[in-house]
Amino acid sequence: MLTTENTTDAPILQMAGISKSFPGVKALSDVSLELRAGHVTALIGENGAGKSTLVKILTGIYQPDEGSIRVDGKELALPTADAAQDAGITAIHQETVLFDELTVAENIYIGHQPRNRFGLIDWPAMHARAAAILHGIDAPIDTRVRLKDLSIAQRHLVAIARALSIDARIVIMDEPTAALSYKEVEELFLIIERLKTAGKAILFISHKFEEVWQICEYFAVFRDGRQVGAGRLDQVSHNDLVKLMVGRDVTQAFPKLPAQIGEVVLKVDGYCHPTEFDSVSFELRRGEILGLYGLVGAGRSEFCQALFGISRPSAGQLTLDGRPTAIASPSDAIDAGIVYVPEERGRHGAITAMPIVTNMSLPSLKVTSKRNFLRMAEEFALARKYAERLDLRAASLSQPVGTLSGGNQQKVVIGKWLATLPKVIILDEPTKGIDIGSKAAVHAFMSELAVEGLAVIMVSSEIPEILGMSDRVIVMREGRMAGAFEREGLTPEALVRAATGNREAAA
Image 1 (cartoon, one colour):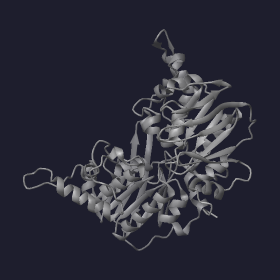
Image 2: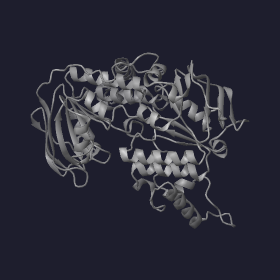
Image 3: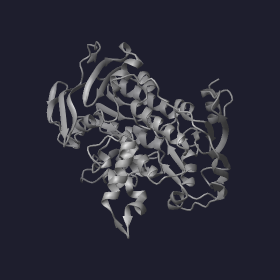
C-alpha cells in the first residue's frame, strides 16, 4: 500500500481496522482513515470501492463489524444518525437529502429546532439563526422559501448551512460539485476555505481529479473495499492515483470507435417551449454521437425531456425516419423509438427499491408478458442479456438497484432502454458521479452503440467528454442554440466562448 509522509498535526478523527460485510459481499476490509482539523482529505475510488459504506458508518447509518472510531482520541460508538450528529459529524450528499415541501429554515434546523420556554418551536429565532448562517456563507436565500423552489446549487448551500447549524466539526462532502456550474463550484470552494479556517475537518469525495488537487491536501484511495494508499497529495502524481484506484493504467478515457455515419434518423425543426428553450433545430444521423453542451441552466435537459414527451413544446416539428412524428408522452416516444437516460438516475431513471430484473424489464412488458400475465422466465432472460452486455456487477438480478454503485445503477438504466430496441438514445450526463474506470466503460459502450447504427444524443457539462466522444456539438445558452461545431478542430475555448456569449472567454 502506498503511504506518504503525514504531517505532525494530530487527526481529530481516526478510523482503524473497519470491516463491513453484507450477504455475499465484503464491502470493507480492514480500512483506515484519518481527518485533520483545518484540512481537506480526498476520498478516492471507483464506484463499488467502499466509499459510500464508509460514509454510512461515519454517519451512523451502518455499524462496522470490526474496527474502531475515535474522535479526539476517544473511542466512540455511532449506533444512529443522531449519535453521529451529536459527535459533530455531518454529510452533504451529491443528491441533497432534504425536504422539498419544507422551508429553507425548517430544512436547516430539522431535528434540532430552537425552542422557547414553553418547549414550542421558536420560529422567529429559527429564521433569524438560519439567515445568519446563510449570510455567513454568502448565500442570499430567503429562509421562508420552500426548498422545491430553489435551484440545485441553492439546495447545496442549504445543506452546507444545515451542517453549520449543528456546529459540525467533521463535514463529509459527497460529490458536492456534480450539478454545479463553474461559477458555483468556485463559490463552493470559497466556502470550503472558510470551513478550513474555522477548524473543520473535511472529507471530500469526488471523481474530478482537478477538483481534488485544487482543494485537498491529503488523500485516501479505496479499491475493492480496501485502502490501497493514503498520504499527502503533494507527494503523488495524477497517474499514481489512477493506478491506485483501478489497479491498472487507464490510457484511453474516451475510446471512440470509427462509426459509419448514415442517413438522417431524427430531424428537429423550430422546437420551442414557453419558458425553457426556443427555436432549436438540427438533424441527427444514424451512427452519430451528437454532443449537447452548455452551462447549468442552458436548457439542454429541458429540451431533451421535451423530445421524450415529459413536457410538450409550444411549437416545432419532429421528423423520425422521414415521417412527421408527434410526441405527447414518454410512451409515444418509446413507441417511436426514442429513449431517454436522465441525469438524476437515482430519482428519475430507476426504482431503486426494486430489483435489477424488474427495472430492466419495465419498459418491455409487452415482450415479457402474454395475455396480461408476466412471464418471469422471459423477464430474467431479457435482464440477463443486457446485464451481461453491459458487464453489470451485482450479486444477482434480484439485488435492489439502490444497493448498487453509481456506475452499475447507470448500467441498469441504460440497459432497460436498450432492451426496447430504440432508434435514438438520449444520454443526459451519462458519466455524472461515476469513477474514471466506469466512465471509460460507458464511453466505450456508447461508441459501440453508434457503430451498431444507433443515433446518440449526449448531454454533458464536461468539456473533455464532449470533445472526446462527439461527432458534432451543439452549444446551448439561455435556451437557444449558440453554436454548432464539427468534431475536427474543435477547441475548449470555442465551446466556452459559445456557452458564455463572451468572445473573449477562455482566449
